[in-house]
Length: 480
Image (cartoon, rainbow, N blue to C red; front, side, top):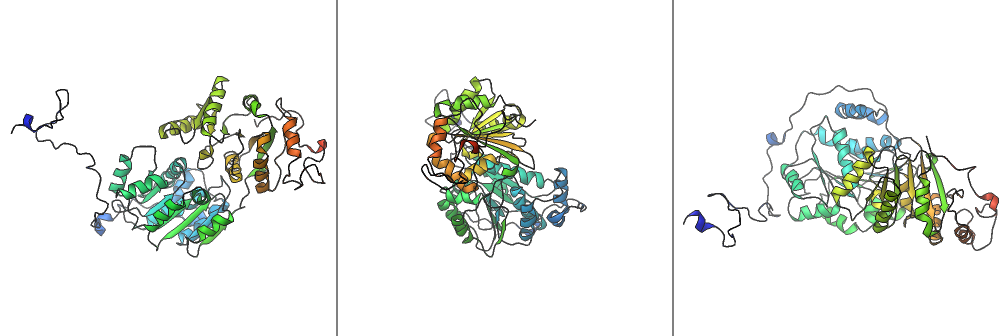
């Protein structure tokens, strides 16, 4: 039989035909059998090719205990002194201890677990086997996973430690190829990780370290079943780490069942870095929120701004309103493709756009330098998200501003936020769209400042008299 007789009956006159003797592509051919048993690589095959050792340099605190290769990477980034969470979290991890860490947003929490992890992998000069990573970092969002991947690349630039980032919304084939080659560290979101586990591309039976970042978000927002499925595949003998900006008691008690004799590191729990953030609360009618938003950009110093909304479609609408007003903006939320989200972040970082309009998917894990202002177009449904939102500004010791719009429907949301903060958000009434009706509705509601209800006013109540309003003298000006 000649080649023409061999072709598929489905191949019509217009179809491209393969070359004689060329094995046709079979759909699913790249999929391995999940039950395939791999022959472990020999010791000589797994040995790293060691680079020339670097000389140790003088660094402060816990950084002084890191290997020279990481020290040089830190110095290249301008870091010589660890932050409080790094100072407390790095030493026990270097010793191989489990850890529960909680710190304010923007205090270097990511480096607090990536630095000791890189050192742990580097000092043992063996490569990971195909599809069997040595460490897993689990995160709730794609953006946070990408950020952690960047941190590993930055701090591990002088090391032969390999890593890959796994999340949905992008093609799976590059992630498959990375796992087939073998990587030391996998940074992943739960959904795509479980997909690859089911297909046999990821096997966790050789895992040495398991780190869960943003543990409160992961456990409190429906990831518990996925985490339990992953934990079933992870060896019981491992080092475990849990890190988050907040650790509510109910989440803390659950996390403690997953660690063994863990070291607890807590830096100002449930307290945002508000000392360097100028917060404002603006009462406004719902119909005037768009006009108020545009008017705020008349302020000086509104250089790089994140606007938060509750709903995805509202983020799109707000973005369009800003664009019509001549303000360069882009939206980022779960309905945007990963390529669109990545491009929006790139344009925001590079200054091509001035405003990023986001849902709470961006409240964590997006580390953009120089955010001057955060605007809560909608108050968050969960009070903890207020901390994560305003924590996008005033990072790395800088100052920042936050603006929070409050309508009559937001009374309960505002009360929950102020209860968490244990203080009232300063009022700002000096704007064209201030609503006395909204203000009156808040007077009649019990507030965290005085804890009273209805019209009973007592000493210390924020609404006891007009003279108690925390209004600024004149129109506030942004940072120059």
